[in-house]
Length: 239
Ligand SMILES: *Cc1c(COP(=O)(O)O)cnc(C)c1O
Image (cartoon, rainbow, N blue to C red; front, side, top):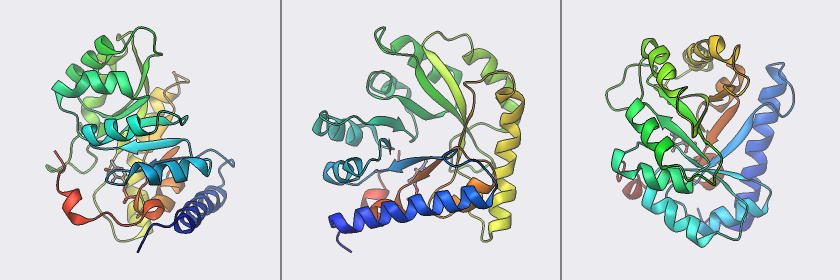
């Protein structure tokens, strides 16, 4: 299916509608769930279209691809989020070119991001990635490692700890998705209680958006339902 302008605007509108309907049926305040448009493998022209429709936050997984698109889109006011696996030799570019990094799961990475964040920029917003289902194929720490990691990260001057992120294992029902995602919501509570900035639950993708909103997500990361399916060949360049 070609990504014509009309397709993108219709798709974006339909995702926005799903978010507002899920927010309402969960009894949550209007506007309490932000949309992160995940543009990995999609051309800069698509990002420009979606940005011109009023979307400001975009998420990318692959650093070199993201840097190229950022260079093509410097005239736009975009808030860039990195959501992919992090190699420690790539932290400088992340610290210099992104506003948020959602996939931090090691103190060493956080330390480098803090050291390499340019002095003139605000502290880098980060989320800690949790491997909710203990899957070997996915990055992230176990929930019982969270406390220790947070204690280390709190001391870093150029890092602003914003919340938790997860990519749960696939579930086939709304109830099972919600149960899984609720574990992440519960894990945030003791921290969000004491720290007003530590308020972000980055969870929910195209397949579990509605369950994620029901479970308390504050930022859903939606790719396919906005930009269309990704081609399998580009998907395999994961790590
Ligand atoms: C690709 C990706 C998404 C978007 O997934 P869709 O199913 O296309 O909506 C969200 N989060 C992460 C971490 C991703 O890698």
